[in-house]
Amino acid sequence: MTVATPSSLYADLNVDAQADAPLAPRTWYGIGGKADVLITPKDLASLGMLVRRCHRDQVPLRVLGSGANLLVSDAGVDGVVLSLDSPALRVVEFNQQGNVEVVRAWCGASSEKLVQDLARRGLAGFEQMAGIPSTIGGALRMNAGGKFGAIGDAVHSVAVMMPDGNEQIFLRESLSFEYRHTNIPEGIILWAVLRLQEENPLAVRERVKEYFNYKKLSQPMSARSSGCMFKNPTLADGTRESAGKLIDLAKLKGLRVGSAFVSTEHANFICVDATDARATDVAALAEQITTRVFDAHGVTLEREVVFWGADIES
Ligand SMILES: Cc1cc2nc3c(=O)[nH]c(=O)nc-3n(C[C@H](O)[C@H](O)[C@H](O)COP(=O)(O)OP(=O)(O)OC[C@H]3O[C@@H](n4cnc5c(N)ncnc54)[C@H](O)[C@@H]3O)c2cc1C
Image 1: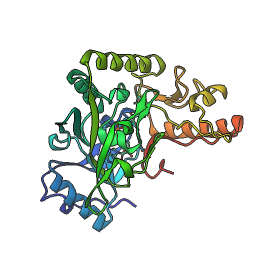
Image 2: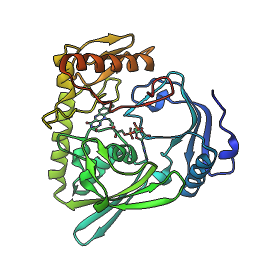
Image 3: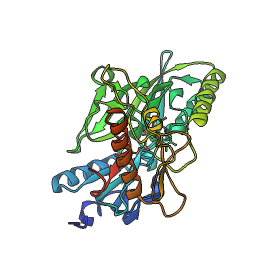
Image 4: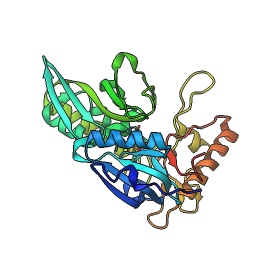
């Protein structure tokens, strides 16, 4: 049953609110339905109050980053979707301590822009994020990364707004960053402090270029997708195998369900047609791939892409 989200949750707060907000334009897939209400808090106090009220009234609350790892149901989602892209939540602060540059990047800041900015300033340690579309919050949530490292490699500390609205800071020593996983607790990731080293800007920029080119050559970067659909699974002998390779060996490249198809360039990318694409097609294709990879290799794939909406979430 759908229950409308009451405006009393946010009417007196310093936020932008849009009822029945289309989410498709906010995701890389460009598909999916509407949010009951999309709220963009303009300051931390309003964010905290909103989170507390949603918690108190048990209103579903979902956090949107740049939508690069998301599939939204065609039927949309109930409750509040939070957008963290107001200027106050996109700030990046620089502060030198000795010869270590300490950078605090807020959740809504774009990782891609930060990669470029740091290269210009000659600050090394974040180049591994080149070509990974994300906000700082979204990247931290799943420890985004690839062949050259992950965001966790640069993290000194992280602040989280817990579901009850209280803020907690976690130092590096208490955090673990593993392959597409971290122990950052449930809640809204507010910011991360990154530790970076000074280096010749040209050298940093060269690495950024090299990493970006590697990605461009190995992935369909401009297609409509959410990146890799599945995590690389750990096999019985403890080694990690490429999910793309398993999908390819099961001869699933090019497989199609309606508007969704397995990329012929990279088998772990489910892409969609430019028009009339549907989330149900993507979800059905992901399901079919899981079954067929299990039949072919006896390996269960785990999804990397986050699905929103009752009909596809399971
Ligand atoms: C072309 C393409 C290439 C890609 N290549 C890579 C790659 O090489 N490596 C890789 O790891 N990923 C890759 N991805 C996937 C994507 O870039 C990452 O998963 C990225 O971290 C998603 O960040 P986002 O801000 O878009 O998060 P979203 O997709 O908006 O959200 C993802 C999840 O994070 C949660 N979230 C977002 N912000 C916050 C916050 N502040 N606090 C708490 N939770 C939050 C959301 O609720 C959701 O559960 C690729 C995607 C595309 C489209």
